[in-house]
Length: 316
Image (cartoon, rainbow, N blue to C red; front, side, top):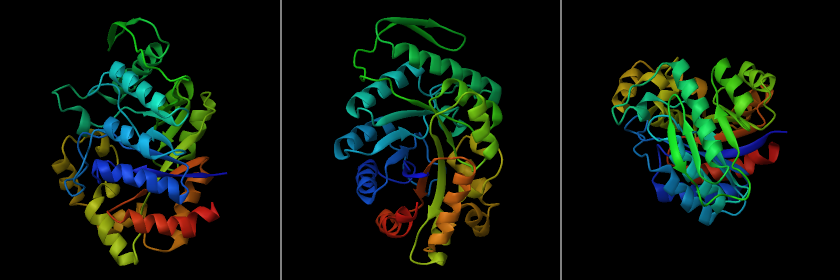
């Protein structure tokens, strides 16, 4: 059975709107949500990038049932894993049984901002593995010390801990990351319906939920939806490893000049046809993803919620 969730796109919305959208998602019938953690948006037309931990505090106050995770946080460069451990423990205490921590190796777009070197992919994965160790160590309570290859923690104690440890979901788009997710994570996060990634997670020992993001653009007609998706989310049409390697929104804008509206519409379900949205969801379900969360591109979240409440959620 596939469970449907909602993507809170920090790149596109003001913090107060993200809080309002989370409440609306719960009321519409979505059971969980993931919120993106960025310092920069992908392109300037998206326009926002609030501090995710402040927004989560607001969401905790206006929702009662919605499970919420970061989708995803990078605990390796911009933010020390000890700070992530502290922030996530607080969120877990505010949302008992409803918060999980999504972690990944991040993007240069957000991680270069303090002048740190952007590591090679294998080193980024090594840093993520050590960061998870640090986070879990601090969640044990008491004073803890860690002296590793990448991180040092000295006599640190998190006093406010949730009754149960926060589950950790690990993002993966390559087989080696899927293996790490299966070995160290409580869940998997992926943005593509890739059966190999899901199988790799399971073969490495992963038994938890598998989260996958579907990007859509609902509008009253397909033409308007395609136009909105192309203007606001052109990065959907950028292929390969550029999403991890480019440093600035203007670099993504330059890359997007080689992207057409048709390129974006290939990966973004555009328009009011329910079958098109259901087809994208089924691709993830067929790949073994059991928790699909929907990213609605653009400002019209209210219309999207009405459409999904009426046309999509009853069929899943």
